[in-house]
Length: 424
Image (tube, rainbow, N blue to C red):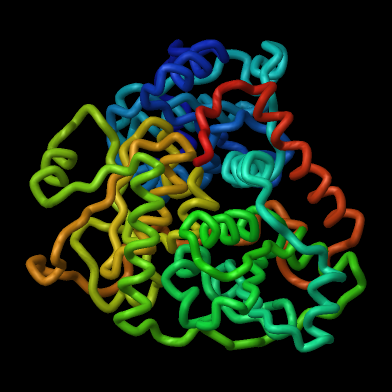
């Protein structure tokens, strides 16, 4: 049966109001608020905890991103007529609690509720809140350039994915993706007198990465590169391209030290630790959505991972939580063979308001699987929002507008009032 025919079947009357969504968020019940427009339109404005699945990708992505068929789902558009078609398709896939937002995005706006721009908005807003509350130390691009020129005792670490680092990076920088920072801090900067500077493309991963090292109590001075590669470019300074520098392997002493630091951070954030029995109980609980994530790097994951666990690098799981876990109120369990990556990832997810646990077990007792995790094929360029912080051809005005938007997110969070974030 064609999707055009499927979209016309049945007359649906189930609807939800903006107040229904807000109520669910405030009491912490499960809800998936799904924007079924293309990503570019989604990025122009959406509710804080909305996730985005374009109508044309529902059959490919929904069962992967919303694994429990009884999950309460509310779909919306902005008057394009997409929400009804999306609801019908979701029901055809077996979802039993699907409603349309009555009045669409206009109703949300008319109710006086906040609209957030860009993508991964609530993770970025959280990063700004962390800096606002903890006064995460940072240096301007010009200051860092001067330190490089003076050959000062510094180490610049890039907290983005390796492929982003390889595309363009700060001169002398080394790739150490976000959740790896605490694990690799001692190997990157063994001398406690060495200053560590963390960068990303914009602000969020620089802030979270630097604050991770501060939270973990590393003895070095730590700074975020203020405004990341965007700030570097706006300062008229050149970036490197095609770099392949990575952190040295971690020895046992460094791993033990990082494990102690990271476990303390997770404890302070209120993260739970579970074993096999509790994991099986979570899996058997049909009333809750469960996301299982192995937060190591892809190559490690593919060489052997626990059955049922998907792969999301820890820093990216924190940065792109709306993509990896669109059901707000769900459970998340993370794991890592060494420990610090799971601990640091979980500490941030807990502060983001998630019910998160660490699977704390000897992996040798499990039958490991190899290969990739069977995620849906990646999206193509159609309908994609062009991020002003990726690539090397962004206009200065777009980059500055992005930074201005990020600086305003703390005030937006306060006006919205649904986030439930806390900062340790």
